[in-house]
Length: 391
Image (tube, rainbow, N blue to C red; front, side):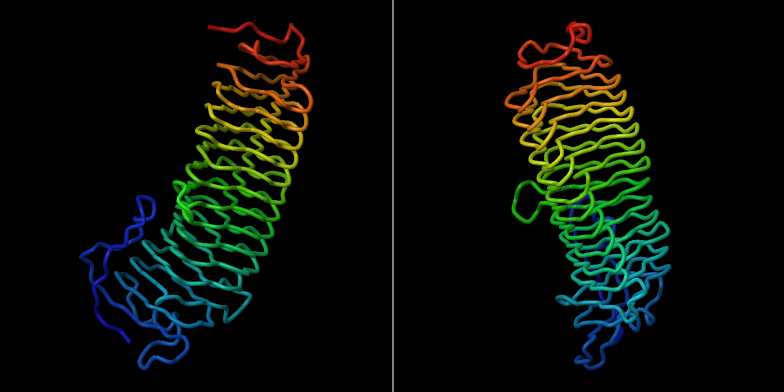
């Protein structure tokens, strides 16, 4: 059934609003009831799309459980939404459950995608996902190549590989998103930009990346990650809670990286990492932070690196860590800070480093510590490797 209707704007915030249609737009619409219980309605999304022009604005209202693999190719200004909810399960389990290719301003809302080979977005598409569930994918839950993806108030769970995998383009995770129980990384980003925008502490607005078999979040191959607000990278089973490697960049403000099986954060292989504003890196199973392989990192104040099993911070293999002071590195089960192999730790101002099982600060004979460490106890560094404080 096709009829003309007005499509209104639905605003979610500055990151996701690019996908929604102008308030004054008019276009075609279709109604889908996959149960077959609504007279005159289409019984599949695929059949409804076949009746709509490729250029929108168009909308498709869906209810029931649809057994099909949906393809959206070369379309613009399309809104597909559950009414109030809907489920898509694969007609062919060996195909992608939803394929979006070469399409612009596509909005998918209030739908559960269950099984098949997940969702893939290709070829410079722009897509928004709101209040969706992606579960039980036989591959990656949500994959994107050279596209711009926004996801809000959604869940990606129980994928056979990573929960979300982005290669090129941009991924905006704009609060209320859970990525959990996937068999590899929760979120993996290569040669792309990740913006994790967590909530403001209001329950339900946080982003949670948890209980994935691999790393919680992996940033690689020149990727850039901006992690702001209430983001929780927790209880992941890989070697690292957050992994930043291969000339990548990270800035993280607030948020929690805790109770991961491995090291809380690894910043390595000529990467740059920076933490600010009450970020907590606590209770991880193999240490707090590792800066290694010609990388550099900054602690901008208010960072808590405490209660980790192993070292609080390791600076290794010609790397640099610069602390602006006001950070806490307490109660780790080995040294608070260890500086090795031609590396440098610069204290711009004092940090609190106490209660660690071994030393507060250790540096080997090939490394250098710069700044005032007079407030620290249990320091194991040769005087030849402690530079005078610079003003």
